[in-house]
Length: 280
Length: 252
Figure 1: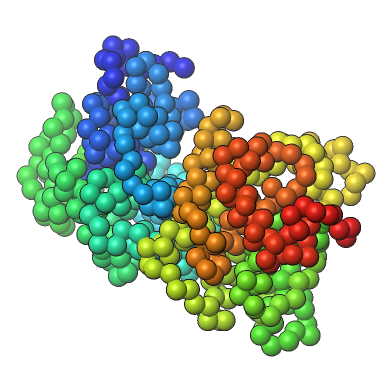
Figure 2: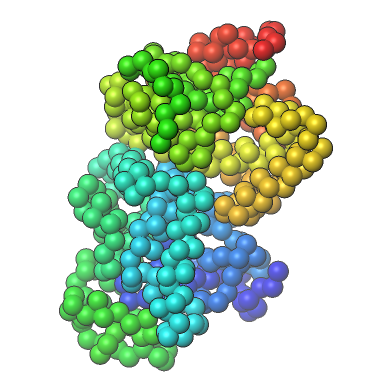
């Protein structure tokens, strides 16, 4: 397994993830899960944006630490918790609930959210922008990708009608809502792994301006979860638009391609151009 | 959708599942989940053993109630809870934990236990006839089933080494163990849906005499979960060998 960052520093985590976008820390919920975990636990790290890199398991995110690759957010987080001695001061019962909730969000909620994302026009276009395929191929590739993703969701055990899928999602979101109650974080006063998993999945949908059915479900039935992710974003991702309660998009500091743009009015969100980040 | 039981009685649940075997109520964890749910909630029901039947979603178990089919244990338990007005006096926080635990067992633990079952040729050889595969075909169907299931597991997102798979399973079992604490059931004094989900998965491995690595994990790290499923079996499935603390095996 080839280490990409050859001049690595000791005890610094190098996090490989998809390139930044104008709205949220990452389009991938699992990349956000890991980046949030690193920030919340003050683990020294460097984000390396790389659309092409893939782990030994064929995915993003992955990390490199002290010359070794760790793949898959489940293993990344547990190994880092050990390595950086991150204590869990929760009761066993709470610990158990949060572990269960984390996996529900990692495995089930992620699939359900993918289903809602893939049904829109804009999300697949945004996903395509992390490939190198030219835009003229989109009208052909996108419907194909949509069909492939829907088929794989159905084959992975979710051979259900739209209303059944919604039922399952609502029950899982209710579980999160019930476990959170009026706490600041799922981990109480301190962020736990479950916070990272839940935030990753919900932020990957909610803060994106392209409307999905999941937006509607969150707004109607789970305003407390919206409140929760806005709060987490404001604390840990304050330099991103999602961490500023939707006030404005700031241009990220980029070395070359993307020009600085002035504050965008909401109408310009919908002119999202996969090649660049604004139409100014 | 064709209803199989044409002379159905009102408000009686007809549960279609794989045929009985000598060890546990059903080789399928999801069939046991439903049968346990029906028993624990005193829902009038009739078990119909049928290795060939499949629901509109292509699976077993499914139920027929008042002339309508309901498929998939997730929807079966929720609809029956509504229809039969099944109350649970659990706090919202506990309710949330149990919902999460149920899905972890339905979706992840089921896959991980399948992984351990399929690795054991003895387990596969013992199980296939139970779902209707003829014994003469076993020299071919056993390795085929092993290959097929393992491949499906890797493709469904579990492209992990043996030790990584074990890590995930141990964490999920620990979640169950932590949530149960010293309670009688996950639902406290009364069985909840989570009890049925957890029992179904663990019983489908533990009470079967063909050893898998999962047996070892349970014995070494989770004797409390073993005690739990023995207790549930003794209360709700007392006529089966698993409900008699292994005293004797009944021939079916």
